[in-house]
Length: 323
Ligand code: PMV
Image (cartoon, rainbow, N blue to C red; front, side):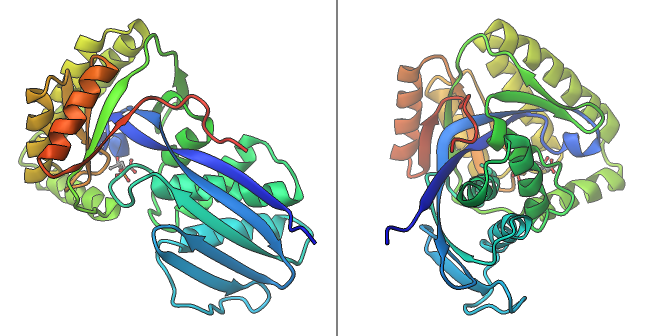
């Protein structure tokens, strides 16, 4: 018998503006980028949930014997297991599922690989039984993602599900932004994995120490976001680049940059980037640079690769979840 399989994919994300300050109420701007995680789901005859990921991890769980794992617990796969279980529990089926994940998204550097895995896994498994709307998929992915970062805003899952560029703030929520021109980004990795939770905690300690006027910095970050929103709408790349560099000054000020991130920013700027900054929590992680054109992006990416760092070119993904 031919086994039924369903495939879904979801994109990575970058934070263009406002990380960390968003935790204290300032806005942030996020973009989905064209690097994806693809999930392939198949029904199993037994009650097992088997998850394999091409980053070299796999795990097997029993649905009925709750909590029983046949392999060592795996921190990377826990939220994905949770996501799959949520979908199975929402269906009236007792079968198990086999899930294969293939990802083009580097893990652990703030590009939303875990959100893309949860979103694509939920959609692929859901397609075996039903076809819920994107909103349904997104809500479940956010709950599963909270296993890793319990105070997560959910913005990673949201942008991965819906794609495009959006503004997010705690009080207003999500708002899609019209993009006048596509953005050519170069994403480079310091090679240092970070823990978002630890860095958020570092900023909290910094804020409480009161050495700098944190609310003044947060106000500046909000203003930068407001101007960036206008530049995205009008397609003013020079302004947008300058604003990224200004945002980086604030991030460095609150102690979340890293020597290697600064080196990548310098390399990007020397190679002609219009602006560059860390993206996400920092403390290593990834750096984004804005290029004027695809050709400029290729030049920046190759200079960074020649300096021994992993680097990729990216454009904004407007599709989000595909199933
Ligand atoms: O997980 P990352 O690296 O994409 O960073 C999350 C962004 C923070 O502002 C640092 C935390 C948050 O919850 O918004």
